[in-house]
View 1: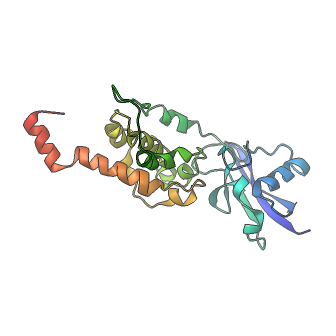
View 2 (view 1 turned 90 degrees about the vertical axis):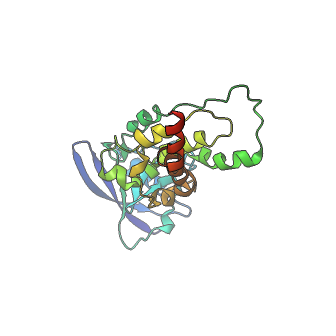
Amino acid sequence: MSEAVMQVFRGNREGGSPVEFRVPITPGMVVLDALHHIQGHQAPDLAVRWNCKAGKCGSCSAEVNGRPRLTCKTRMDALPTDQPITVNPMKTFPVIKDLVTDVSWNYEVNKKIPAFKPKAGTDWKMYQEDIDRVQEFRKCIECFLCQDVCHVLRDHDKKEFAGPRFMVRTAALEMHPLDSADRIPLVKKELGIGYCNITKCCTEVCPEEIHITDNAIIPLKERVVDEFYDPIAKLVRKITGAK
């Protein structure tokens, strides 16, 4: 039976370092299986967050060989075994212990986004073509891999930019055919969409293959431009006195 050498981060808020483990590889094994083997045989106090092991709960996010991934969907046989496999916590968020990070900031951002507000007097009739656009966004499992890979969140103050996950949530609401709320001022000012320079790194790591940049962020940027920078709209507002 072949073995893999794994370098797993061990530590907490004060600091830490990678610790090397040897794990036997079995057919169909994923990185989360390897972490469970380490827990069961070598380091029972290894902290790992997980739940469904089916790629739907978004709990087991980590960085494997430097790339944000779900450990339950990352097959061991897809990784090179001629060098150690590194498993580290998501860099964008504070470490609690080992591979578990504090992602509570995301839920604080989520509170800023107004909920669905149905149009008055609507009969709730919708056509499939109206639904197709927003249905993609509902696949998000809140693994926060897109938040982790976003260089704006990594390199700048997270209070300035909400991140890709919440552009997806806002887009799902803004593009809903029966929603009446206007969240575009929020997107511009508090969610900081101007910080995104559409590198598409968030789209590349999304396990649900949501086209975050093309289908959520760029359309929201276009709406911000229409509402705040369109010269014709500004002229109409100036003439009519509308805000």
